[in-house]
Picture 1 (cartoon, rainbow, N blue to C red):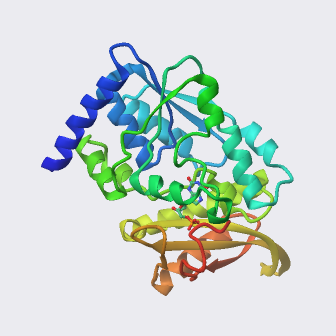
Picture 2: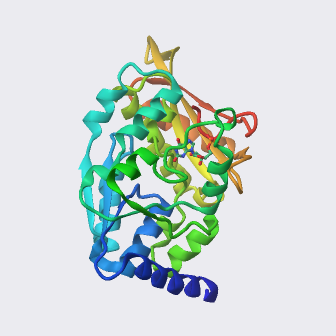
Length: 317
Ligand code: XMP
């Protein structure tokens, strides 16, 4: 695509100009489309003077940390450091039930500028993030605290005297995907569904415990694998399995059991401001239900969330 090729060349020139001959740039990456594309762009522009940090907060999907490590450092050649903070995060989340408190704790613990002496900090902020964070200014307008949009909290930036670089700031999501293709990032990465910064924590209602994280992870893995197998992944904007910690009664074998409820959610949307539940074939949902109750210990019900946005949001918390 000619336009994207041109954008790419200009973005590379712009980054080189801003960073200079010796500047070092740090970024926190998640493995999502935006941070991956932005990281590859930085690598093209300044090579090993770009440093990516992946914080494993213990709230990523099944095998995701290892996979992101492979994709970014092996396949894309990006300078990547993985910091394992899963224990710190899961300990810190003990006893927190309020969704906003969860988000705030995770945002505060994710201070990537702790990582050392560096002049620039890069964020994969997109154009819609810029607009949304403008409308998020007043507390009354704040629907949810999104922790990875609209720049780092000033507290983090000022203390370090870091300058912010946001090379994707003028792009929409589909343009970021195009840019990813121009950077020769493989299609599966370019088409990944978005994943919220607080990860699985906002897909477990109420208190986050290692047991519930494990259940959410396994159920999600089954759901997403079946979606891929059925060839539906690219028709869906976002899909996940969540855990409702209320216990429902069930029968397993000849015993009465109490188990968690797994909530499946899959939506289509163009702008993530409004969304519709995805219309799965019935036998697909039955197959996923069967696999989850049989393979994930501690679950005895599976429900499909058909709520549109509004009034529902895409995430459960
Ligand atoms: P909601 O749930 O508000 O989600 O309909 C809209 C989109 O935003 C994502 N989302 C988040 N992303 N930090 C993030 O980085 C967050 O705290 C957060 N909350 C929601 C959500 O996954 C969906 O794509």
